[in-house]
Image 1: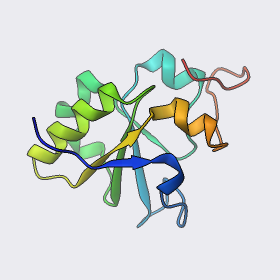
Image 2: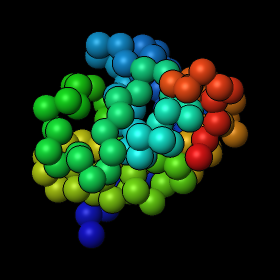
Image 3: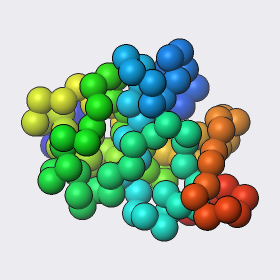
Image 4: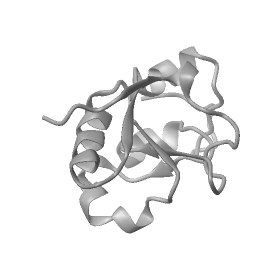
Length: 115
């Protein structure tokens, strides 16, 4: 398996914020229901099973891959690294994101949460 850099949420760059040109690309590989319940503002959502077929949707920038706790994002980051991307795994996933006090938004209209 390809060694993938692990990055703590607290070490993620915040300027420019995720989703801004030239900034951090936070690729969330969780399933649709997990994404809808709560995700990082500006993140790009491509479920793990669709990453290989949706590469054209990954913007240029510093690529950090996240899931709920770090397992799926590790798989995605390893595959991306083997295929020419400079990808890092976000250690601890979205649970670590919330624990670090980073913002969370939901698509459901409910209070954002990590599932």
